[in-house]
Structures are given as C-alpha cells and as structure tokens.
Image (cartoon, rainbow over all chains, first blue to last red; front, side, top):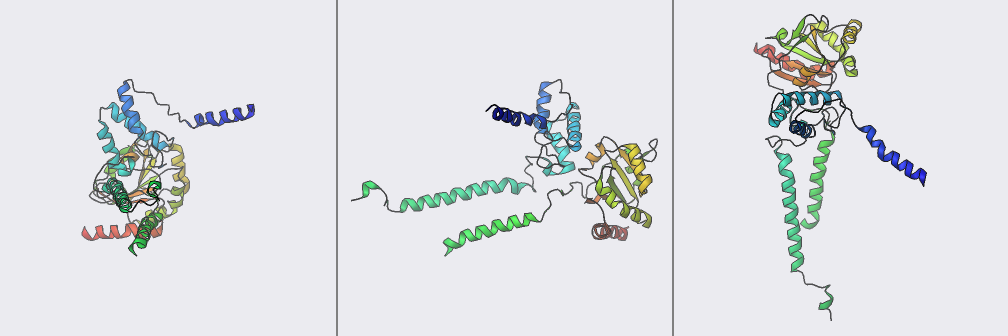
Length: 141
Length: 176
C-alpha cells in the first residue's frame, strides 16, 4: 500500500518537472503582468504548434515572449501586439484568430453546424410527436 | 430512398474534407509577407563583425535572403546547392544567420564554403521575428522593388529552385 501511494505521489508530482523556467522577471505593474500572461496564453508557438508560447521552451517562444514584454513596456496595446504577430506570422499565430475574410469560415461553420443540428432535432421531435403514443401503459387495454 | 441516401451523402462530404486535409503539411505556414515590402534590417556581418550588412546592400536588386544557422540540419543539406547557385551568378544570396554563435558560424562558412555575398548576424533573433521566421532554413526571394516575391520553407534543392524561383526570376527579368 505504501509503495502504491509513494508511486502515485511520484507520478502526480513529477508534472512539476515539466514546468518551464523562463528566467523572466515579472513586470512591476501587476496589471501589465496580467495582460502579458493573458497574451502569451493566446499566441501559438509556431515551432511547436499545439503549444502556446507560454507553455513552450522553444527559443522562438522565448524570443516572442521577450518581444511581447518589450512591446508592452513600450506602452503598446494588446491589439497592437496581436497586429504585430499577425503581420509577421499570419492568423495562425493566434489561438483565437480574428474574424477576417480568410478566417470567416472558422467562425461561421460551427454556428451553421449548430443551426443544422437544431433543425434536424426539431424535425425529428415534430415527427415523433405526430406519431400515436403506442408505448403508453395507460393507453393499453 | 432519400432517407437512406442522406447519411451517405453527409459521410462522403465529411470524408472529402478530411481527405483534403490529409495531404497538407501543417508545419508549412504561408507567409503573410508575400507581395509586401520585405522588412528592413542592419546587423553585424558574420565574416567581419566590425562591418554591417543589411537590406540596404541589395536595394534595387533582386536578391535571395537565406535564413541559416549552424544548428540547423536542413541548412547543411541545402548548402551544396547554395554554393552551386552562388557560382552560377544567377542572383546575389544574402544570409541571415539566425540565433547562432559567431565563431561557430564563421567556422561553418570556412569549412563548407561561403555562398553568401554576406551574412547578417541575428544573435537575438529579432530580425528573424520581423521576417516571420519560425524555422531555418527559410529562403526569401526579394524583388528589385523590395517586395517579398516568394518564401521557401525547408532546404532548397535544384528541383524546388526550378519550380518555385526560376519562373519568378525570369518574369522579373522580362519586365525590367
């Protein structure tokens, strides 16, 4: 039992070893730090595509974090930072791509699928409601 | 009849979308810089760090900007072709030595040969970010007017050169 608990504890706490040490100092202004952390959680690491630059140790990710810190210290708005990234790396750089001509399909298709599903459901329910209730025990006999 | 056919049609549509996606390589991202002015830069030269090299060096000329590094395997792979291309004198090749170490970069060029008119030393990767570089090697074709005409991801080869670069270079030659 003790071995089991010990092993489980090792497994659970081992995840800490995946933490990345960026060696970055936090902004003095907590508001700026909050904005910074929100931004880096929304930017894709282009080198390691299913990670954000917040999660990645790749040098491109740390370079991008450094540039974003610099831009925020220079007083740029979040929008300007995202613009900077999209101009250079394209819409794919953002985990929430902007609704532009090229990305419109990403935003419209889920809504269309939802509408289509709702319509299908409505049709099925309506058809079933029109059927005679034949499994109602009260109707028997 | 339609009742049975509808799921089949939907299935085939989904199949089509997914099959289409299978052949695409998600690590190859289109560059938003295409048809736009190439970013300006000025950095120390790899061969002689007391001098600078930058976009001014190829102003009003068509040029290749090749992103390379000593840690990049694909760069070694394309190096032979770059040497041939430089020897042919088709187009000046400028190097952007990205996130590298200066002595190692110099040794690389001494040992394998230097196909570049000059290489810019981008130690902290800021120029690379401006160019939207996310993995070496990358090669940009910059027109005489300074616009990015093409971006090749990954190692160059004679085949890719013929297919992607030669038509653009020829077209520009005809209009000048």
